[in-house]
Image (cartoon, rainbow, N blue to C red):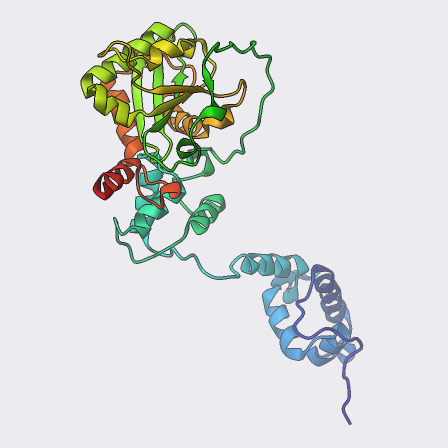
Length: 363
């Protein structure tokens, strides 16, 4: 037969809460003020509180404070606030330790890649998994995002990430009426090889505008299968300028090579792309097509999702409102190189140029 030596039953392993600590503080204070002959032992206090003697002993140490009585004499007592503060502080240390631990070299590498080279956390991890760098610690993308959220890095926050820790919010604005591409082919007529990204040579094309007062813009071309990117600087956002740049590109590559590389180009309904016949026509051989132009549906930017994604990356280097005429061709070439050497999750961690080289080797 067993006996229960306490006035209440408590679930085994349950920690004291703040209310119980306040009750213990009151019991300790009453016990101190009582006559010595009537003071309760530690065992009796544990029974009143419904805990073991060992638990009470540890709790008294946790909340130990030195007070003074009315005669200004010091005595040892217990404070619920001190004990609770100590409990809360130690609770923050629960759970597994940081995997990155004392690997300062890895932390410095991550900060450099994101802050200086403008990589995303996922791109950093893909490079590490590919074996381009070697560190004693290995972490995954989700863990890296968690560490950034928790403020583990000294110089890195969500504000330094490509999306700055914000979810995109759609803004509703009054828009102009879409232009009509009379006689132009729609995206519904585009071949399945282009729709499903099964064949190299199908591109998306868009213009990236300057800020107010600037006429220059960028002609951004992105290959759908490999994400290879070409950035061309235009003097103005006009049909003549777009045609002039494509003509320059065809002359530099040659008619046959241009036709193989640019089998089709998908554009939006912007006024600079309305002259589809001139865009399709070769400048090197009369009455010959150099490519096929397809038009998205009006207000359907998602039909050129790859193009829009690349534009977002370019805006990290050329913020909205910037005057594009002030950027040199060397600077634009550096941005183009960064885009083509950036590791991409959609390509299993390789870059656009590596994907193009892989296709070339495969024949």
